[in-house]
Length: 155
Image 1: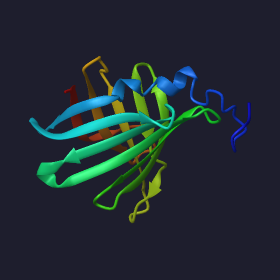
Image 2: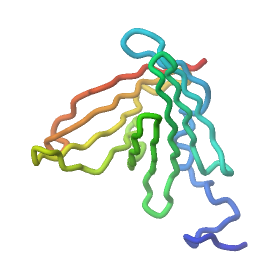
Image 3: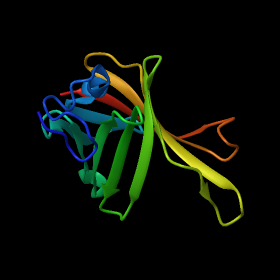
């Protein structure tokens, strides 16, 4: 048995129970927002079960994006990177607690001197559906404003 660059055993590198916390998201989904099915999302588990790979497609708005999520056994956090065809690059971290997966950005300074932080919340998770919210705060997380809600339904 050898070690990888992080000193972890390569025998079963992603076998911890936490590495399966995003498995509810795996599969083919229809996404509804603004009361209309707008998009599809295909979520796969790759790289020996270590990577959760998202393939988002909203053809009516010519919007596509992908994310890569991994559970970091060193920090005990999920880490996700999102990129899209509008030039976005978003880094999020977080975890699964109380039936919700919550990943958030680091606070970022705004032109007016305030700090803004964003997060995504996966909740009401069932076998064939869940809700995803994109939220933001400008008061260090005291209050969160919902900017975008997506209803996921398994195809």
